[in-house]
Image (cartoon, rainbow, N blue to C red):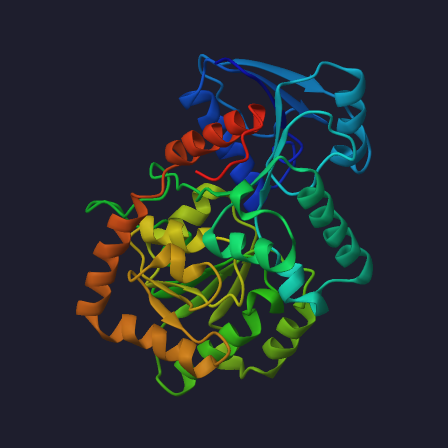
Length: 379
């Protein structure tokens, strides 16, 4: 069966990539690779900011500029007045207002349900409306983890039989352990030894508690490490981060480096030479930084909540993210117990190989084919 598959390419057209954009780019690339017999139309407001490898697949770009609410309004108009694919794939849970064809959407997380205080009224209403539209109009939903699927079932009435769990993959060519003859770059070398954190710098990601844990490690346990935090200031509680930073003694503050947004290659380099990824986020739909660290041969200290135990398994140190002392104790287990560190590094490398984008793409194609056939029975 050959399908005409429509793809919402608005995320891959963004200038800077974070979680949803990376997912969109990788899943599109691997859809073309594993199912080149289908025909694809990418609808987007502009071309992708990264080179999208289409291989031998039949891929058409449809560039349709529009200033705001591109998916909801402009893509709707295209689907009504233009060519009609057999099935539409939206790599987020924002559906077109009108979509007269079977549609599959991806739900990444429902953080706004868990942390409503960090969302403004307008943003919260926008998220609520998007979730309502997705669960009211999608033929099938893809959840990126069992934890996200449970949240969809908890907060909506969407049928469980129409939700497919498809885990992310990890780019093992980019994220890999350091080779025996590989040395850190000048940026990494000047901060050795260091602990690494990546993601938005905000209370929603538990950055304030991470900073307090680092203070304990420096002042009580006298660790020699720097703390490198990569990521932009977030919109959900950055003021709380600033408040904690202002409380830190000068000596501890000088050991903390907020380096801003880093691209994929820089992130991979920072991960490879870190003594640990410290990822105490209070909520994750998947937890991509943890998987990338595992693939890089870097042990992980992470929260024992939401999707993180599902992704990390027994290959990392899972801690109570609500206690700075527990986070600090988790880090100490890694940097003071070489045998524990060695065991977790080996286990993480092995587990990371289970998560491939090829596997994710094959599962996604199966979901799209079922949606096109309007098969909504449980497998």
